Image 1 (cartoon, rainbow, N blue to C red):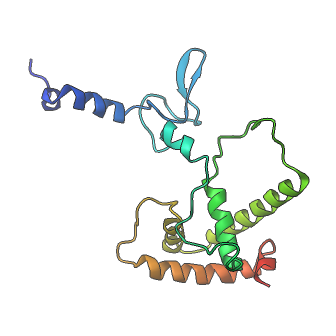
Image 2 (cartoon, helix red, strand yellow):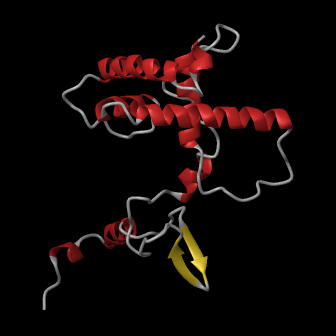
Image 3 (spheres, rainbow, N blue to C red):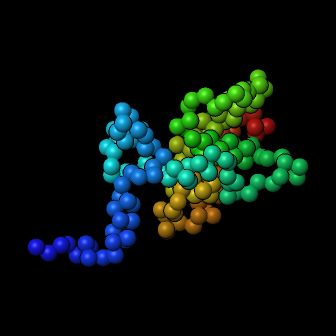
Length: 184
């Protein structure tokens, strides 16, 4: 009996391909009752799903990355209202939602906790306003802040779509209760 064609390739390449289809190394991989499982709800363990995230890559994402849209340093000029909203939103999107436990002995002061709550309110309001934008405009903003890997609209120019998106988003954010104070 003959083997399938792929079985005659390099054994190392076969092992790498098999591992690329598995959950091995996923950040959501957990061990429960001595058995490997997926911590994502309703996900079957063993076959790589769309939620796969490298454990090593996830370790480096704990540190904030610089956004693609370069914002001037704080001592040059203050951020505009739109820049502040988009900055808070991008940081909020990059935060890991899996780290819901106790971080350690460091606790936030009242001022830091209030600042974090305010930034979360701004980010959530920005996200809600972005939901009313056209999909290509949402995608342009995500692509600009490196939250999307590919540009799914080849017929559009990214720079033009981003400019249109920010103009429409700014109009919406000026009317929002949580963000209107940033535009005064």
